Image (cartoon, rainbow, N blue to C red; front, side):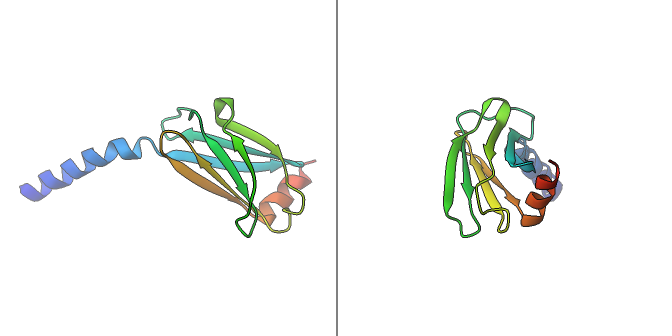
Length: 112
């Protein structure tokens, strides 16, 4: 009886943490990159930072999370061949990242 109760309590306690996971998605369309950030509940984060890094983890730019959780920027020169890592950190203490591979970027560049 104690084990099932402990399992149920553990699951219930984990739900609030899982309910606030940050989700990040990035895509390329033409020469523009769009980063979408939101919590798993659908709520848009506030006061966040988007860091764009090259294949060697050098920070290329730091941008604010835009309204509606969307940030758009021009594809940095020379990154189509190496890819990008996009990391989002929000004031609520959550962070997540998205890798744009050279294949992802090539596909997006073909869209125009």
